[in-house]
Length: 245
Image (cartoon, rainbow, N blue to C red; front, side, top):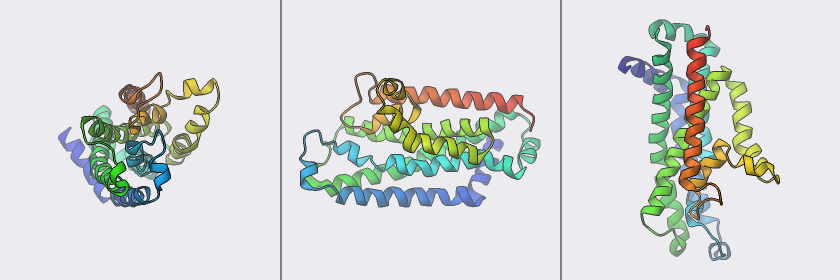
């Protein structure tokens, strides 16, 4: 496994798109943080129900997309180029090959999320001044949850990409889901009760400082996302070891 992970590290740090993804992610997170820290006016900051934690983590869903794309391309790029054959010759144990890739990219995404989420949150809190979120374990828990949210969604997306084996198909399915479809479904009466259990919606509960709804809270929502991620990665493992290249 050590050598399989080392091979995936070489791919991740030398191929063009994964190599630039961390820089794009961090610039996006910090840039959005400055915007979210400066835009709110006094009326919004003093409005009933204002959520300083939620505002501080507002950049997370947009920034996370960069890492999701990195994870998808890490999986599908080898199938598109045909280099998957060479990879499997080098690592004939397909389960080891698969988990080395998913594990490494998810871990790297989590580390990048720490580097991006924490300063972005602090920048927003600095921008809103006296209206900032109270310091304490609860606030720190939401920031930590945002890191887990990012890493779990990357793992979930890599499982889906493994099932589809097409970067275009995976992006066409997941980006509309994360940006539009989940929000639309959540606002449809009846359907919204089910849509709250979609991976991005459920996990996104942890990005709200005021808590979740009457069914899912911050950590239970993150637990639902973890179940989705485990299921997706498990299906990806199944197809990796069962299908021919």
